[in-house]
Each structure stands twice: as C-alpha cells, then as structure tokens.
Image (cartoon, rainbow over all chains, first blue to last red):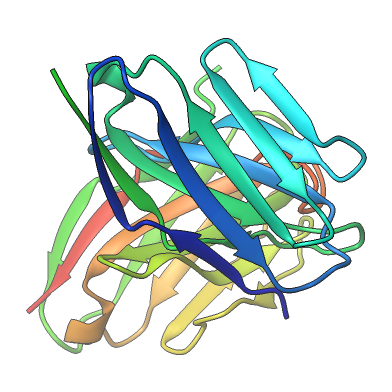
Length: 112
Length: 113
C-alpha cells in the first residue's frame, strides 16, 4: 500500500517568516494530495489540495508544489501569522482507492 | 448544517468495559471513516464504509467493530476496552472515494484505565 513520509515533525518560525513542510509518497499511481490543518482540540480541516495534472497551486498565503518524478510534494506558508500555529498533515490517494494515507503530521509554531 | 458530529466528546472506561462511539453526518456522504490519533503516529484508519450497509477494515482494526445501518450514521464499538485503546478518535466523511475532501468531526477523547 501507499506510504507517506512527512518532515519535519516540529517547526518553529518567527511571525512573518515562511514555513515549508515536505512529504514523499511511495506509490507512483497516487494522484491526489490534500493538506489538512488541525487546530488544538479540533478535527483536521482541508486547507488546500493538488492533483497530479498540476505542478503548483496557490491560495493566498499557502501554496503546494508537486514533483511527480521525485514523488514528493510540499506545503509553503508565507508571511506566517500566530493563527497558523497548528498541526499540518499531508496525505495521498489515487483513483479507485477508497482511502487516504496520511503523514504523521508537522506541529508548526509561529512565534510572535 | 452541523457537518460531522461525534458522541460522546470524552469518556473514561475501565479495562474490559464496552462502549459505542456514534458518528453522524448530514451531508449525504457515501464514505465514512474512523481514525485514531496518537502522539507521533498521525491518523491511523481503523475501519471505513463506502455506503450504507458496508464496512471494511483499515490499518488498525483489531479490537474494534463498526456498523453502518443508516447512511448518515457510522458506529464504532469497543467490545472489551484495553489501555492500548486510549486515544483520540475521529470520524470523517466524504462525498465519494479517497479523491475527495474528508470532513472530520471534533473527536472523542477516550481513556481506558
């Protein structure tokens, strides 16, 4: 089955700096890569996703890049704010696959 | 719309006791999932369902059973709780397969002593 590795496990940045979280996946058939944000005491929530026919996608301060050849994808958060502090999960899935495989999560702390 | 709701929010069990966690969604989603979240281990899939009346095993199904008698509800049962089942449990639903956004509930924190 699919295996998703995520790093770093923890990340501290100063407010206003950028944060980058990286993930790799094992199955070249994977073609859907969502990112979820989990705030303290809440369930994860989708913040952005990318499909394999696209190399990059942006939504305001967040962007995701995908390199299918290398089988890795990354989340970029620019101009970080304290409210960006949370746990972020990457995930992978593929057509015909009923499940999503999650990474272990990255705890991001934005220091004011 | 309430989205995905979970009952209860917190529970403490003694080893060997049983309980059922209830998940309900009002989005008419076909797929529903149960995950457990433990420190350093991310989200691990316990069981899932691809439609009313169906269930399937996920990554860590041992010690759990599930039922999906109604499309909007997905129940997770622990027949004989063990301390290793101390965790935060999340239910999620999605419109269709793994290619669609999953909507998560707020979680149930379970402690087994």
